[in-house]
Length: 397
Ligand code: AMP
Image 1 (cartoon, rainbow, N blue to C red):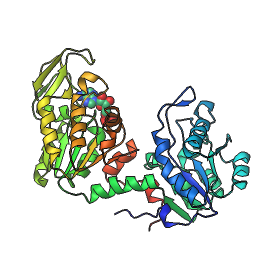
Image 2 (cartoon, rainbow, N blue to C red; image 1 turned 45 degrees about the horizontal axis):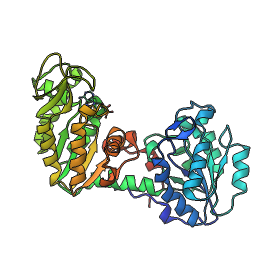
Image 3 (cartoon, rainbow, N blue to C red; image 1 turned 135 degrees about the vertical axis):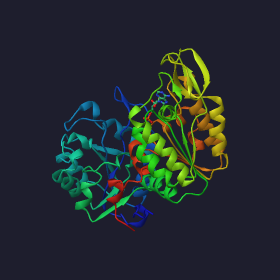
Image 4 (cartoon, rainbow, N blue to C red; image 1 turned 90 degrees about the vertical axis):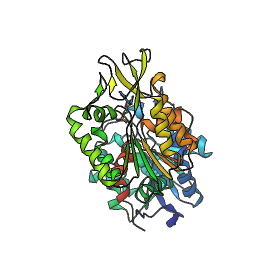
């Protein structure tokens, strides 16, 4: 059970509060094309303003590789945040992030004011968790709040290093929500607990499969990774994605699931194409019967029903990874069927970040899910059972 201090456990009145947010938003010609991350950060920021804190926001944006890159400046974020909050968010433009502008801006703050620092990755030390930059960030504040789940699996200056030099380090509402759902619900789930894993490769989900096999009642495996299992079981998979080195591992997982009494469901049919294209000719075939020149690009209709039935009576469902090449509409049926099944169930539904989160939102089921994680890599590491440095660095209750 993760029990971290949050912004509800501290008094920030008159204090300088440095908040690590995840403002890593997509930009096109200086315009923010998806502002979900800004909206998600608002509850924490509003609470700190209401409590009379001096709110100093920071974040990374893209990969400027340790030097100022104007196209990756957080300036447009300050403009949009001002609009969303209905009050000025002053942008402290400083190529070295904690420079003269930032220092003066902080000195001039009144209670309830908000400023935004420049992209933390303008500094090369940031991703190396260097001491100097960590100290500089800490020097700006009395209290540190981490609300950036998307980077919680990394130990950087602005989410981990800084905590060494401040007495109070707590989590924000967004981070708390991720911990509650991904961490505590996965470790202490309401049963039956069903996990659905998809995506391209077995190799990238090995630790997740191993960890979840100890916790779930049913494990569903779809997507490109299922063909390695099919081939390992002697089935014909044509040109489908396959990791030959992982066939033995796949067989071991099947054995392990049986030993642990976990129901492991694999596709029973597949939607296949004669090329990797939305315009490919399409057939539905039984699993293990894919002709030589064809490839499995989605689960088939019988599998859609099988997977949907498996989540019907679940109490907790965690989903990570699409069921097929959902970027191509003709091969998005399986992913959509799973999204719909999750939208229809009464279970607590938790969507790991990355592709499955994108798919659920694109398909219009976003508001039907209990929780959609804001962190792709971070949510995967949570599901692997790893301790995330960004979470661990916050004070315990
Ligand atoms: P991952 O990052 O491992 O979750 O994989 C996501 C990617 O897997 C998406 O881009 C999907 O298009 C891809 N994918 C899912 N199913 C298949 C498949 N049957 N063949 C090829 N790629 C797939």
